[in-house]
Image 1 (cartoon, one colour):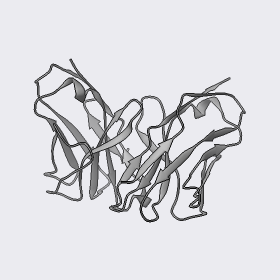
Image 2: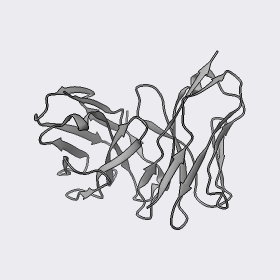
Image 3: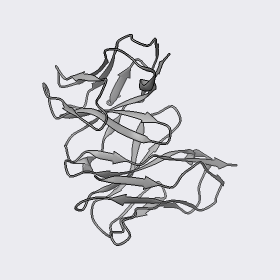
Image 4: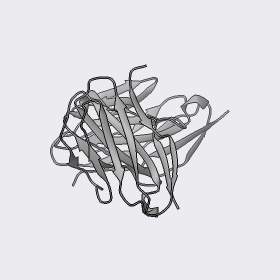
Length: 114
Length: 111
């Protein structure tokens, strides 16, 4: 089925460890986004990309890095995980930068940092 | 900056009850407004949207009207079902086109 696929679905990290979350979409969307979801705070934008080879900072970028080497993939990296990065991470993609077309979301990655 | 505020949850209703989830926004310009729904264990799905003042978005029995004068976009449904249990997010598009979300409202519908 066409859509956005996130891997892994669950992960537990120790403080200071690193990891990469993978987001893949097969809809040929130009725009991709990484959000984190925390209780009582909704979704907050971490980084986004407007096309292959481009990335930009969102609302809460500190502690994260991203790469968009291929149009269909958007990677989110944590170089040195901290307990404050315990969250559910969602990737999304869209056809246009205009949100009117709607975003397609992945099913999320639940990350716990101990 | 632009922001969205939703009523706090959880909201617990009996089946066939009337639902209202309040959403107000602060924005420069005239953003498009959205409601997204997140079912347990899943990502967010677009439920409905409105792109200009007085527009009404509707889908699956849910409705919301873009009210510029009160800067509101309240979600309503006349008769909820157990299957409507989910978290509902109000959102707006910022001047750059990106989505800004409210904090989400959890709805639980009991048989």
